[in-house]
View 1 (cartoon, rainbow, N blue to C red):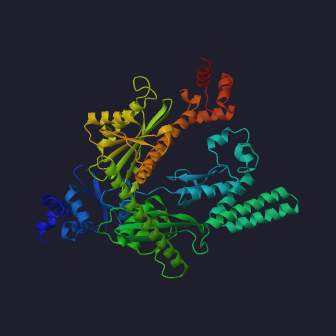
View 2: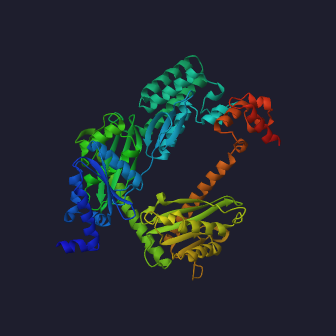
Length: 626
C-alpha cells in the first residue's frame, strides 16, 4: 500500500496529513524527559492521554502512520492540539496518566464503563465508634476494611457483625439526641452506648474484637468468646452463655462464606484477563485479612490493535486510581512495564506492593481459577450481547425504524399529588443498560407561574425541553441523540413529546407504552404517531424486553422521588430560622430532645444552650410564638 492509499483508507487525506504535520512540529521542541501528553480536537476535547519515558521519542512514533492501528490513525487525523506535562520520573508520569484517564475519559483510551466504587466496612474514629458501610471517597477518619465486590456481601457481613459485636449503627446526630435506647438495642444488635447502658471500656473491647475479626484474627476472637461462654456457663449464667454461643456460630457462618484459601493469601488481589471474539474480560478477586471478599468482572472498551499485556496494563492503571493496591497482586500474565507499575502501586499504597505471575503451587491454582471465571463471564457476556443484538433488530422491525437502534432512551415521571415532581431517563444500547448515562430531572416549573401540580403532560414537556434544548444537548459527544424514545404513558404523553420535538425540529421516533386494562402487565398497548394502537402478543420476546426497560425507568424514577420525599420529611422546623445551622440545631436537640420541646422553651431556657445568644434565643422564641 502506498502512502496515498494509506491516508485515504482512514479519513480525507488532508486530515491525517495535517495531524501528522502538527505532531512533527511539536516533536521539534519536546524534551527527552518523562512526561504525559494529551491529544485534543478542534473543540478542545481530550482524545487521548499517554505517558512516556522519553516524550520526544514517544510522540514521534505517531508520525509513523504505517505502524499505527486504524484506531490511532483516526485519532491522529482528529488531533488539532497537544498538551504536555513534564514529570521528574516515569512513575510520576504513569500515575498522572492514569489519573487523567479516570478524570477525562478520553475517547481513544481504554475505558471502564463499569468502573465503580466498591463498598467498604468502616469503624469511625469517635469516642463511641460507629460500624457502617461506606462507598466513595474515604473522607471520614477511621479504619476501612474491604473492598467488597458486591453490596450483598458487605450487607450480609455487616448484619452479622451487628449481631455479634453489637456496635452502634446510628449517625452522630441521632446518637447525641437519644434519651432512651432505640429498636436496635431491643433486638440485641446494639448495646445502647448512647444512654450509658455499657461502659466506655466494655464498648472499646467490642470495637477491638471487631477490628481483630476484620483483620483476619477470627480464631483469636472465637477463642475469647469461647472462654467467656464457658465462664458464664460455669457461673450458671446460661442466657449469657447462649448469647456467646450464638456469636461464635455467627462468626463461623461468615467464615464459611468468606474463608477460601485464607492460609495462602492475606491481603491480595487476583487479576486474570481472557479474550474471545475480539472482546476482553478482566476478572478481579479480592482477598483481605485472609477472607475472600468476592469478585467482579470488567469488560474494557477501545481495544483495537492492543495486546492483552497492554490492555491489562491500561486497566490496572485506571482501576487502582479508586482502589488502594493490596500487598500482593497476582496476575495470569505480566502487564506491560510490570516493574514500573509495581513501583507506582507501592507509591499509591505507601508500602511495598508485589506484582507477579505465580508459576506453580496453590497461588497458581487460585490464578487459574480466576482465569476460568474470566472465560465463563466473557462467554456469558458475548451470549447476552448476541441476544441483545437480536432484540434490537426486532425492535427496529416492529417500530419501523430506519436502522437497528444502538441507543434507546426511556422516560418516566413520578410525583404524589403533584409534590416532589421529578422526571427520569434511563439509557439502553447494544451492550445493555448504560447506567452512566442515566439522568434525573427535578421539575422546576411546577407550582405558581408554571405547570399545574400533577400535570403529567406538562412534566413530560419540561423534561423533553431540557433534554433536547438544555445542557445535555450541548454535549453531543457524551450525550448523542437516541435512535428511539420510549415513553411510559398514553396518547397524552406521546402528543406532549412530539409537541416539543417538532418545535425544536428534532426528528426521533417515539413510542409510548400504555398499561393494559387494570394496569395488567403483559397487555400493554403501544402508541406510535401515524399508526393505530397495537399490542405485541405475537412477539413476547420483544414485549418482555420493552417491559424490562420500562420497569427500570420506573425503578429509577421512584428511587429519585423517594430521596426527595425523605429529605422533605426529615427537614426540621429549625431549618427555617435564620442563624440556626447544623451545630446550633444539634445543640438545641441535644438539650431539649425534640423540636416540640424547643418550641415550648422560654427565652431564658434557650440561652442555656451552648452557642445560643440572647438575640438568637429571642429569634427562636419569636419564630414559634408569632
